[in-house]
Length: 120
Image (cartoon, rainbow, N blue to C red):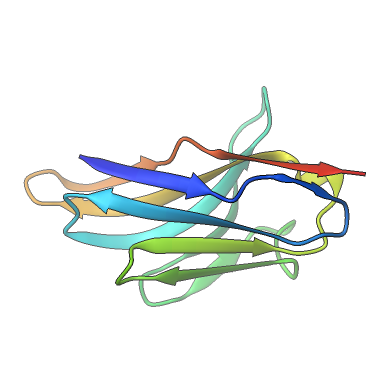
């Protein structure tokens, strides 16, 4: 079984920075791309940032310039730092990872999410 557990979601004021973290655990043979998505109630989940196992990053237009994604392959963690937050960044943020398990192959896994709230 695989688990992705996010942490770091809190209430912050507009203009502040925030870092959310995610750690993968379980019977994992390999991890390829890891990333962060966000979702508001009633809306589709959308990508914020992704990072490959080799460190290549991709950002959404809203995240570009304000967000930095990084990972530690040995610790199976991925971190998203967001700067200059605004109320529009309020959402549940989900960690995802493309993971290989012996006997099961490659699959996408998701965490349960961490709430980020930005007050004006």
